[in-house]
Image (cartoon, rainbow, N blue to C red; front, side, top):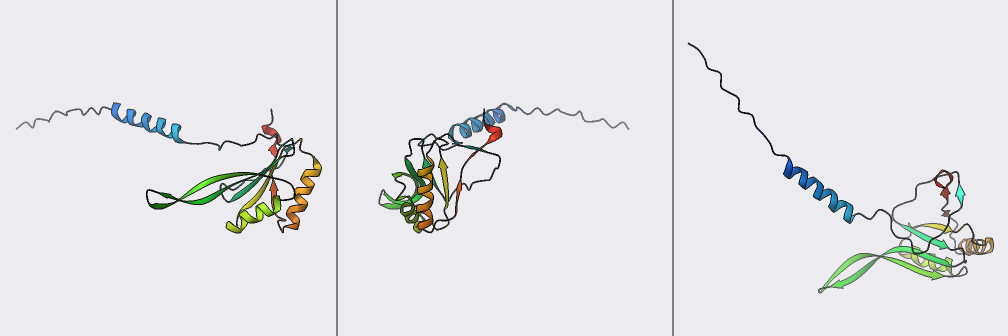
Amino acid sequence: MKIKKKRRISIRIDMTPMVDIAFLLLIFYMATTQFKPPEQKEVTLPSSHSQIELPAKDKIVVTVTSEDSIFVDYIQRVEKEVEGRMISTLERIYAETDEYNVGAEINSIRAINPYALVIIKADRNASFGVMQKIMDTMVESNLARFQIITELESERI
């Protein structure tokens, strides 16, 4: 008795819907991702050879422009009432200050968030006197630990 082999039926899977969904997800993530937060004041950083990773959150950025203006930038948790409910949101605060009050401003922020790291982002053309006053004010306010941001020398054009 002869056994007949069953004929195999080939299965064909249409990949078009999966490719469409992959491209839609890719477009969605590209449109909603914010790669770098916009800077309030543009500064030209001095160059250096060292590199250190900065934290993504819990930081207070003190920006010194080439005109010796001083700005304090930080993110604060704010409670807002929306439709009768209290909602906690993060809000970016950007305040102008002077070299004599920068220590008090940072201390008021650190009273809310004691783990915040102080980062100084100074323009390369900022005067040395302003930077010295800022550092002296910070030491008087018991803020002896801070970091200064520089640009890695290999990144310069």
